[in-house]
Length: 357
Image (cartoon, rainbow, N blue to C red):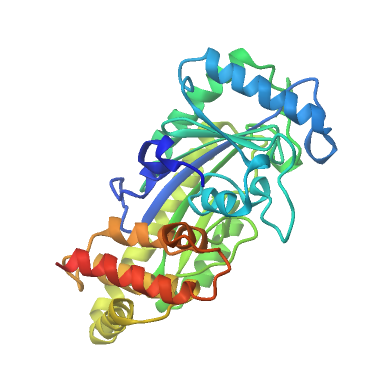
């Protein structure tokens, strides 16, 4: 069993609901793609190259200050439940963890993680530096990742072209290598049927929307991940500024939609959110998707001050700890245990009972 106690806050500090606009924006994530000179990129890299890259990253982390004392998790040496646990905590991508069907992680696949920033090694690119902050905090999240990038850049030979910028496996990442995203909760726009118009508008201004776990994941519980689509031709500051302006607009649209719901359908909305709360408090079996949808309703109720005495932090934790690998680890069960829906319902009841006490 993986020891997540090695990480500050178990790698979940981004869930504490302390950041700006945290009732709507769960988290902000910054990712920088980097590759090393002298090694083949991406799928064509040889196994011994991947192992050598991991060694170089670990040596650089130990030689620097910001990642000194960082923990390395060798995903290529872990069993699937532990890899899934890291994925559910948003610490590694599905690709790095090798969670597609019965695939295994590539040799040398690892997570080197410090207090607030991690480095995924041997994913699509040699390095994926990433950091997360609670709420809407683009500048703060970027500052943390940029500091690690600058330090590692002095210790490792990053592949860089004078005209094109940082070189990456996928052309859409060439340039800054920056992907900035926010995980945002938009039930107001969904209920007022404005969501499609907003999402279509995002694509017209160079942003994209995905599900809870980014590319290839489904939208559940009205949680969307909004991020920039391209990295070439603009500086990091320009990309962050553009994303920040658009996200602020989306947050404003969501706030307006919630005001409309309160003015035009308060009783209907109150009934919806209290029904969701009641089901979570008393249900005896819950699927993951049903839990996400019910948590979305309760989260909306808390945001509208219709449900008192319940913290956003508690709801954030439930988003993670009700997922299969976390439940399985909590109860000492396999992730495919058919009793997990019953276990999930019991866990949710315990958490909400404690909060209400």
